[in-house]
Length: 407
Image (cartoon, rainbow, N blue to C red; front, top):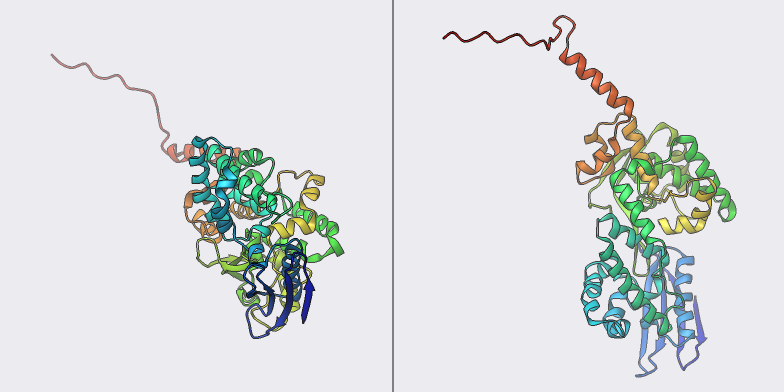
Protein backbone atom coordinates (compact mmCIF):
# COMPACT_ATOMS: atom_id res chain seq x y z
CA UNK A 1 0.00 0.00 0.00
CA UNK A 2 2.03 2.93 -1.22
CA UNK A 3 1.15 6.51 -1.97
CA UNK A 4 3.10 9.56 -3.07
CA UNK A 5 1.90 13.10 -2.49
CA UNK A 6 3.30 16.45 -3.56
CA UNK A 7 3.75 18.72 -0.57
CA UNK A 8 4.16 22.51 -0.70
CA UNK A 9 7.49 24.15 0.16
CA UNK A 10 9.46 21.61 -1.93
CA UNK A 11 8.92 18.58 0.38
CA UNK A 12 7.88 15.40 -1.42
CA UNK A 13 6.42 12.73 0.87
CA UNK A 14 5.79 9.07 0.10
CA UNK A 15 3.82 6.85 2.47
CA UNK A 16 2.98 3.18 2.81
CA UNK A 17 1.52 0.72 5.31
CA UNK A 18 2.94 -2.81 5.42
CA UNK A 19 1.08 -5.66 7.13
CA UNK A 20 3.48 -7.96 8.97
CA UNK A 21 1.30 -10.51 10.80
CA UNK A 22 4.24 -12.05 12.69
CA UNK A 23 4.94 -8.80 14.57
CA UNK A 24 3.46 -7.66 17.87
CA UNK A 25 2.28 -4.44 16.19
CA UNK A 26 1.65 -5.87 12.72
CA UNK A 27 0.93 -2.69 10.74
CA UNK A 28 4.08 -0.73 9.93
CA UNK A 29 3.36 2.83 8.84
CA UNK A 30 6.26 4.47 6.99
CA UNK A 31 6.98 7.83 5.42
CA UNK A 32 9.90 8.85 3.19
CA UNK A 33 10.99 12.32 2.16
CA UNK A 34 13.94 14.36 0.97
CA UNK A 35 15.48 16.70 3.51
CA UNK A 36 14.85 20.23 2.15
CA UNK A 37 18.28 21.43 3.34
CA UNK A 38 20.61 18.52 2.54
CA UNK A 39 18.60 16.72 -0.15
CA UNK A 40 19.30 13.40 1.58
CA UNK A 41 16.57 10.77 1.50
CA UNK A 42 15.06 10.24 4.96
CA UNK A 43 12.54 7.75 6.33
CA UNK A 44 10.52 7.24 9.49
CA UNK A 45 8.36 4.28 10.53
CA UNK A 46 6.29 3.08 13.47
CA UNK A 47 4.37 -0.12 14.31
CA UNK A 48 0.62 0.05 14.93
CA UNK A 49 -2.02 -2.44 16.07
CA UNK A 50 -4.41 -1.99 13.15
CA UNK A 51 -4.88 -0.32 9.77
CA UNK A 52 -6.88 2.59 11.19
CA UNK A 53 -4.13 3.54 13.64
CA UNK A 54 -1.50 3.31 10.90
CA UNK A 55 -3.58 5.49 8.56
CA UNK A 56 -4.18 8.01 11.34
CA UNK A 57 -0.44 8.30 12.04
CA UNK A 58 0.34 8.83 8.36
CA UNK A 59 -2.47 11.38 8.08
CA UNK A 60 -0.96 13.40 10.93
CA UNK A 61 2.50 13.35 9.29
CA UNK A 62 0.98 14.32 5.95
CA UNK A 63 -0.94 17.24 7.46
CA UNK A 64 2.25 18.49 9.07
CA UNK A 65 4.18 18.15 5.81
CA UNK A 66 1.46 20.12 4.02
CA UNK A 67 2.45 23.20 5.99
CA UNK A 68 6.17 22.61 5.57
CA UNK A 69 6.92 20.56 8.71
CA UNK A 70 9.14 17.57 7.98
CA UNK A 71 8.24 14.19 9.55
CA UNK A 72 11.17 14.23 12.00
CA UNK A 73 10.09 17.64 13.25
CA UNK A 74 6.46 16.53 13.43
CA UNK A 75 7.45 13.64 15.71
CA UNK A 76 9.78 15.66 17.94
CA UNK A 77 9.28 14.77 21.60
CA UNK A 78 8.31 17.43 24.11
CA UNK A 79 11.69 16.99 25.84
CA UNK A 80 13.68 17.69 22.67
CA UNK A 81 11.43 20.54 21.59
CA UNK A 82 11.58 22.19 25.02
CA UNK A 83 15.36 21.87 25.17
CA UNK A 84 15.71 23.57 21.81
CA UNK A 85 13.16 26.32 22.44
CA UNK A 86 13.13 27.05 26.17
CA UNK A 87 14.79 30.47 25.81
CA UNK A 88 12.07 31.55 23.39
CA UNK A 89 9.35 30.09 25.62
CA UNK A 90 10.55 31.99 28.70
CA UNK A 91 11.27 35.34 27.04
CA UNK A 92 9.68 38.28 28.79
CA UNK A 93 9.64 36.63 32.21
CA UNK A 94 11.47 38.06 35.20
CA UNK A 95 14.67 36.16 35.94
CA UNK A 96 13.47 35.22 39.43
CA UNK A 97 10.65 33.23 37.79
CA UNK A 98 13.00 31.10 35.68
CA UNK A 99 14.21 28.85 38.50
CA UNK A 100 10.78 27.61 39.72
CA UNK A 101 9.59 27.20 36.11
CA UNK A 102 12.66 25.22 35.08
CA UNK A 103 12.42 23.10 38.23
CA UNK A 104 8.83 22.25 37.34
CA UNK A 105 9.92 21.41 33.80
CA UNK A 106 12.71 19.06 34.91
CA UNK A 107 11.00 17.38 37.86
CA UNK A 108 7.41 17.09 36.68
CA UNK A 109 6.75 17.97 33.03
CA UNK A 110 9.53 15.89 31.44
CA UNK A 111 8.93 12.74 33.56
CA UNK A 112 5.19 12.92 32.82
CA UNK A 113 4.99 14.07 29.20
CA UNK A 114 8.52 14.44 27.88
CA UNK A 115 8.46 11.23 25.84
CA UNK A 116 5.34 12.20 23.86
CA UNK A 117 5.66 14.01 20.49
CA UNK A 118 4.51 17.62 20.77
CA UNK A 119 1.81 17.08 18.12
CA UNK A 120 0.33 14.15 20.06
CA UNK A 121 -0.06 15.91 23.41
CA UNK A 122 -3.77 16.36 24.05
CA UNK A 123 -5.84 18.34 26.50
CA UNK A 124 -6.80 15.02 28.11
CA UNK A 125 -3.15 14.04 28.57
CA UNK A 126 -2.44 17.35 30.29
CA UNK A 127 -5.57 16.95 32.45
CA UNK A 128 -4.41 13.54 33.67
CA UNK A 129 -0.88 14.80 34.24
CA UNK A 130 -2.00 17.73 36.37
CA UNK A 131 -4.25 15.46 38.41
CA UNK A 132 -1.32 13.10 38.90
CA UNK A 133 0.78 15.93 40.32
CA UNK A 134 -2.05 16.87 42.64
CA UNK A 135 -2.58 13.26 43.70
CA UNK A 136 1.14 13.09 44.53
CA UNK A 137 0.41 15.90 47.02
CA UNK A 138 2.39 18.57 45.20
CA UNK A 139 1.63 22.07 46.49
CA UNK A 140 -0.59 24.50 44.59
CA UNK A 141 2.39 26.71 43.71
CA UNK A 142 4.34 23.70 42.42
CA UNK A 143 1.46 22.64 40.20
CA UNK A 144 0.98 26.24 39.03
CA UNK A 145 4.64 26.68 38.06
CA UNK A 146 4.87 23.29 36.33
CA UNK A 147 1.72 23.96 34.31
CA UNK A 148 2.80 27.51 33.48
CA UNK A 149 6.08 26.45 31.88
CA UNK A 150 4.27 23.73 29.90
CA UNK A 151 1.79 26.34 28.64
CA UNK A 152 4.66 28.55 27.48
CA UNK A 153 6.49 25.76 25.64
CA UNK A 154 3.31 24.61 23.92
CA UNK A 155 2.51 28.22 23.00
CA UNK A 156 5.85 28.38 21.22
CA UNK A 157 4.86 25.21 19.35
CA UNK A 158 1.71 27.02 18.21
CA UNK A 159 3.82 29.90 16.92
CA UNK A 160 6.09 27.45 15.11
CA UNK A 161 3.08 25.85 13.42
CA UNK A 162 3.59 22.43 15.02
CA UNK A 163 0.11 22.57 16.57
CA UNK A 164 -2.89 24.85 16.11
CA UNK A 165 -4.28 24.92 19.67
CA UNK A 166 -2.40 24.93 22.96
CA UNK A 167 -3.55 21.78 24.81
CA UNK A 168 -1.90 22.88 28.06
CA UNK A 169 -4.41 25.66 28.65
CA UNK A 170 -6.54 23.52 30.95
CA UNK A 171 -9.22 25.21 33.01
CA UNK A 172 -10.56 24.48 36.45
CA UNK A 173 -7.44 22.77 37.76
CA UNK A 174 -7.93 24.54 41.08
CA UNK A 175 -11.27 22.78 41.36
CA UNK A 176 -9.49 19.56 40.41
CA UNK A 177 -7.02 20.28 43.20
CA UNK A 178 -9.86 20.51 45.72
CA UNK A 179 -11.43 17.31 44.37
CA UNK A 180 -8.12 15.47 44.61
CA UNK A 181 -7.76 16.64 48.21
CA UNK A 182 -11.21 15.21 48.91
CA UNK A 183 -10.17 11.96 47.25
CA UNK A 184 -7.06 11.68 49.38
CA UNK A 185 -9.04 12.41 52.55
CA UNK A 186 -12.15 10.38 51.76
CA UNK A 187 -12.20 8.47 48.44
CA UNK A 188 -15.50 6.87 49.52
CA UNK A 189 -17.21 10.20 48.85
CA UNK A 190 -16.43 9.83 45.13
CA UNK A 191 -17.97 6.35 44.73
CA UNK A 192 -21.25 5.56 42.98
CA UNK A 193 -24.06 4.86 45.38
CA UNK A 194 -25.14 1.38 44.25
CA UNK A 195 -25.33 -1.19 41.46
CA UNK A 196 -28.47 0.25 39.76
CA UNK A 197 -26.72 3.63 39.53
CA UNK A 198 -23.75 1.97 37.81
CA UNK A 199 -26.00 0.21 35.29
CA UNK A 200 -27.87 3.45 34.63
CA UNK A 201 -24.55 5.18 33.91
CA UNK A 202 -23.35 2.40 31.62
CA UNK A 203 -26.62 2.45 29.65
CA UNK A 204 -26.52 6.24 29.25
CA UNK A 205 -22.92 6.17 27.99
CA UNK A 206 -23.76 3.53 25.38
CA UNK A 207 -26.76 5.54 24.17
CA UNK A 208 -24.64 8.68 23.79
CA UNK A 209 -21.80 6.94 21.90
CA UNK A 210 -21.55 6.70 18.14
CA UNK A 211 -23.32 3.56 16.95
CA UNK A 212 -24.46 2.78 20.51
CA UNK A 213 -21.36 0.64 21.04
CA UNK A 214 -22.14 -1.77 23.91
CA UNK A 215 -18.46 -2.24 24.70
CA UNK A 216 -18.28 1.14 26.43
CA UNK A 217 -20.91 0.08 28.95
CA UNK A 218 -19.16 -3.23 29.51
CA UNK A 219 -15.85 -1.47 30.22
CA UNK A 220 -17.51 0.78 32.80
CA UNK A 221 -19.31 -2.05 34.59
CA UNK A 222 -16.21 -4.29 34.60
CA UNK A 223 -14.00 -1.48 35.94
CA UNK A 224 -16.35 -0.72 38.84
CA UNK A 225 -17.00 -4.37 39.71
CA UNK A 226 -13.26 -5.16 39.81
CA UNK A 227 -12.05 -1.82 41.27
CA UNK A 228 -9.69 -1.47 38.30
CA UNK A 229 -8.20 1.43 36.40
CA UNK A 230 -9.43 1.96 32.82
CA UNK A 231 -5.92 1.30 31.50
CA UNK A 232 -5.90 -2.05 33.31
CA UNK A 233 -9.26 -2.98 31.80
CA UNK A 234 -7.83 -2.22 28.36
CA UNK A 235 -4.89 -4.50 29.10
CA UNK A 236 -6.95 -7.61 29.96
CA UNK A 237 -6.23 -10.61 27.73
CA UNK A 238 -8.25 -13.82 27.53
CA UNK A 239 -5.41 -15.74 29.20
CA UNK A 240 -5.62 -13.45 32.23
CA UNK A 241 -9.08 -14.76 33.17
CA UNK A 242 -9.41 -17.96 35.21
CA UNK A 243 -13.01 -19.05 34.56
CA UNK A 244 -12.71 -22.00 36.95
CA UNK A 245 -12.13 -19.87 40.03
CA UNK A 246 -13.28 -16.64 38.40
CA UNK A 247 -10.10 -14.73 39.12
CA UNK A 248 -8.54 -11.99 36.98
CA UNK A 249 -4.74 -11.73 37.16
CA UNK A 250 -3.97 -8.07 36.53
CA UNK A 251 -0.67 -8.00 34.65
CA UNK A 252 -0.61 -4.90 32.44
CA UNK A 253 -2.14 -1.54 31.68
CA UNK A 254 -2.53 0.60 28.58
CA UNK A 255 -0.79 3.97 28.74
CA UNK A 256 0.12 6.84 26.34
CA UNK A 257 3.56 6.66 24.73
CA UNK A 258 5.36 8.09 21.69
CA UNK A 259 3.29 7.22 18.63
CA UNK A 260 0.16 6.17 20.52
CA UNK A 261 -1.01 3.83 23.25
CA UNK A 262 1.12 0.92 24.49
CA UNK A 263 0.82 -1.83 27.11
CA UNK A 264 3.22 -1.90 30.06
CA UNK A 265 3.39 -3.29 33.60
CA UNK A 266 0.76 -2.29 36.10
CA UNK A 267 1.35 0.60 38.48
CA UNK A 268 3.81 -0.72 41.06
CA UNK A 269 4.99 -3.35 38.54
CA UNK A 270 3.32 -6.16 40.49
CA UNK A 271 0.68 -8.56 39.23
CA UNK A 272 -2.34 -8.95 41.49
CA UNK A 273 -5.44 -11.14 41.67
CA UNK A 274 -8.97 -9.73 41.58
CA UNK A 275 -12.20 -11.72 42.06
CA UNK A 276 -14.81 -11.63 39.30
CA UNK A 277 -18.19 -11.38 41.02
CA UNK A 278 -21.19 -13.34 39.79
CA UNK A 279 -22.93 -10.21 38.50
CA UNK A 280 -20.39 -9.75 35.70
CA UNK A 281 -19.49 -13.36 34.90
CA UNK A 282 -21.97 -13.60 31.99
CA UNK A 283 -20.49 -10.39 30.55
CA UNK A 284 -16.94 -11.76 30.85
CA UNK A 285 -17.95 -15.12 29.35
CA UNK A 286 -19.49 -13.36 26.34
CA UNK A 287 -16.37 -11.26 25.83
CA UNK A 288 -14.15 -14.38 25.94
CA UNK A 289 -16.37 -16.06 23.35
CA UNK A 290 -16.30 -13.00 21.10
CA UNK A 291 -12.51 -12.73 21.38
CA UNK A 292 -12.01 -16.10 19.67
CA UNK A 293 -9.41 -18.83 20.25
CA UNK A 294 -6.35 -16.58 20.63
CA UNK A 295 -5.41 -16.55 24.35
CA UNK A 296 -3.65 -13.19 23.88
CA UNK A 297 -6.71 -11.50 22.40
CA UNK A 298 -7.93 -8.42 24.23
CA UNK A 299 -11.10 -8.81 26.23
CA UNK A 300 -12.14 -5.17 25.78
CA UNK A 301 -11.48 -2.98 22.74
CA UNK A 302 -12.90 0.05 21.02
CA UNK A 303 -15.44 -0.38 18.21
CA UNK A 304 -12.61 -0.72 15.66
CA UNK A 305 -10.48 -3.06 17.76
CA UNK A 306 -8.12 -0.44 19.20
CA UNK A 307 -6.79 0.01 22.71
CA UNK A 308 -8.82 1.94 25.27
CA UNK A 309 -7.66 4.76 27.51
CA UNK A 310 -9.54 6.98 29.91
CA UNK A 311 -9.39 9.79 27.32
CA UNK A 312 -10.73 7.52 24.58
CA UNK A 313 -13.61 6.45 26.82
CA UNK A 314 -14.37 10.07 27.76
CA UNK A 315 -14.45 11.31 24.18
CA UNK A 316 -16.28 8.34 22.66
CA UNK A 317 -19.12 8.44 25.21
CA UNK A 318 -19.33 12.21 25.80
CA UNK A 319 -18.65 11.35 29.43
CA UNK A 320 -18.82 14.86 30.87
CA UNK A 321 -22.22 15.55 29.33
CA UNK A 322 -23.64 12.19 30.41
CA UNK A 323 -22.54 12.32 34.05
CA UNK A 324 -23.85 15.88 34.34
CA UNK A 325 -27.23 14.84 32.96
CA UNK A 326 -27.38 12.05 35.57
CA UNK A 327 -26.55 14.38 38.45
CA UNK A 328 -23.06 12.89 38.85
CA UNK A 329 -21.03 15.98 37.92
CA UNK A 330 -18.15 14.96 40.18
CA UNK A 331 -17.66 11.54 38.58
CA UNK A 332 -14.47 10.81 36.65
CA UNK A 333 -13.40 7.56 35.04
CA UNK A 334 -10.99 6.85 37.93
CA UNK A 335 -13.92 7.07 40.36
CA UNK A 336 -15.10 3.70 39.02
CA UNK A 337 -12.09 2.27 40.87
CA UNK A 338 -13.06 4.17 44.02
CA UNK A 339 -16.55 2.72 43.61
CA UNK A 340 -15.34 -0.87 43.49
CA UNK A 341 -12.99 -0.50 46.44
CA UNK A 342 -15.72 1.17 48.51
CA UNK A 343 -18.17 -1.64 47.71
CA UNK A 344 -15.57 -4.28 48.62
CA UNK A 345 -14.93 -2.49 51.92
CA UNK A 346 -18.64 -2.19 52.71
CA UNK A 347 -19.05 -5.90 52.00
CA UNK A 348 -16.71 -6.61 54.92
CA UNK A 349 -13.53 -7.49 53.02
CA UNK A 350 -10.63 -7.22 55.54
CA UNK A 351 -8.19 -4.38 54.97
CA UNK A 352 -5.21 -6.65 54.25
CA UNK A 353 -7.19 -8.53 51.58
CA UNK A 354 -8.56 -5.32 50.06
CA UNK A 355 -5.02 -4.01 49.85
CA UNK A 356 -4.02 -7.00 47.70
CA UNK A 357 -7.05 -6.57 45.44
CA UNK A 358 -6.33 -2.87 45.02
CA UNK A 359 -2.58 -3.27 44.58
CA UNK A 360 -1.90 -0.51 47.10
CA UNK A 361 1.67 -0.08 48.28
CA UNK A 362 0.57 1.19 51.68
CA UNK A 363 -2.12 -0.12 53.99
CA UNK A 364 -2.88 3.51 54.92
CA UNK A 365 -4.18 4.08 51.39
CA UNK A 366 -6.50 1.09 51.67
CA UNK A 367 -7.78 2.13 55.09
CA UNK A 368 -9.27 5.29 53.61
CA UNK A 369 -11.99 3.08 52.14
CA UNK A 370 -12.87 1.63 55.53
CA UNK A 371 -14.38 4.70 57.18
CA UNK A 372 -17.19 3.36 59.42
CA UNK A 373 -20.61 4.98 59.51
CA UNK A 374 -22.20 6.30 62.72
CA UNK A 375 -24.13 3.09 63.42
CA UNK A 376 -20.86 1.16 63.34
CA UNK A 377 -19.29 3.63 65.75
CA UNK A 378 -22.29 3.35 68.09
CA UNK A 379 -22.11 -0.44 67.85
CA UNK A 380 -18.42 -0.34 68.69
CA UNK A 381 -19.20 1.62 71.85
CA UNK A 382 -21.90 -0.86 72.85
CA UNK A 383 -19.52 -3.76 72.29
CA UNK A 384 -16.84 -2.19 74.45
CA UNK A 385 -19.38 -1.48 77.21
CA UNK A 386 -20.43 -5.15 77.21
CA UNK A 387 -16.81 -6.22 77.33
CA UNK A 388 -15.97 -3.99 80.29
CA UNK A 389 -19.22 -4.76 82.17
CA UNK A 390 -19.92 -8.51 82.13
CA UNK A 391 -23.34 -9.41 83.56
CA UNK A 392 -21.96 -11.70 86.24
CA UNK A 393 -19.61 -9.08 87.68
CA UNK A 394 -20.78 -5.51 87.16
CA UNK A 395 -18.15 -2.88 87.56
CA UNK A 396 -18.75 -0.47 90.45
CA UNK A 397 -17.31 3.00 90.21
CA UNK A 398 -18.21 3.78 93.89
CA UNK A 399 -15.02 4.72 95.68
CA UNK A 400 -14.45 3.23 99.15
CA UNK A 401 -13.10 5.55 101.85
CA UNK A 402 -9.42 5.17 102.52
CA UNK A 403 -8.74 4.01 106.12
CA UNK A 404 -7.02 6.60 108.28
CA UNK A 405 -3.38 5.94 108.97
CA UNK A 406 -2.59 5.02 112.57
CA UNK A 407 -0.32 7.40 114.34
